[in-house]
Image (cartoon, rainbow, N blue to C red; front, side, top):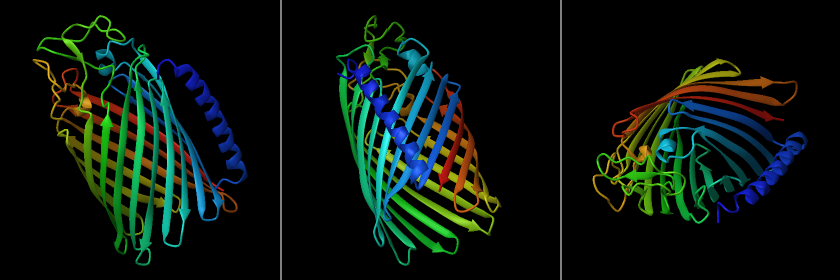
Length: 379
């Protein structure tokens, strides 16, 4: 079971991760085409902090084939309303480790891609694979890209070695990119995915009755009131998303980008996302980019802030409630040139996010702050 074998898997995973990091370090020194490192930090008013470092090395196998290896860690500490609702000991700290390996092969006008991902955390294990191709034509003014992806996940529960659930996801993506004229680029995309299996949180319990609260639960179901039931979502979910993105040069120093994404699924969730950014070339090696994103969604059909009586599907997950968000960010990209060809690219960005919840009783808003710093070295 997931929980009972956690220590052995984590030990093996850490040993494998150390080997990968050592390999990446040697590769970047010897023959890597690109080496990158980044760290992301997020803190919000819901008492959650995330620290996520990432390492990536890309190297050619032959001139037309490249392999990339990425190792990422997410460490988060939280005493959020979701953690409090599960009545777990707070704050909770967990770590997720992820390894990604991808392969790109270039033909004359076609690029083939394949990738594998392994992700592990104390109560969750995921294996995923993807593949696809892109085709350039019309003198490289047009590109069609097709991709498919699938994953299999195992969900466990801390303190309950008998709990194990499975989830499978399969989907595809189709995009078309077109140069419309001097300084104008457009892309349209459609995505389809199907999720089957367990799609809830084993730690979330739902109070039944207008005045009921799940405050007596400890780990597992010990001490749970009879008015509390485990979260239950449908076992099937079909998701559709369509988007369009435009970019226009405004002279030699400025370019403006905008995008719109529409999403819907058979749980009744419908969302709209609007993005805009301005890229300002400060000098030959420096770009400053203010960015803005707005997101709006309605609630899933079975979501309720309170349940007066038991139902087949019950959830109080705020991510399935009606919500909106604003994200304002500022990003600075800089090229650092050395004698010869090696180039170091640095990116630093800072963002503020504002979430509003129209029908979520524990809170009505969250404010979050993000900082990301990345370095990419190209020998």
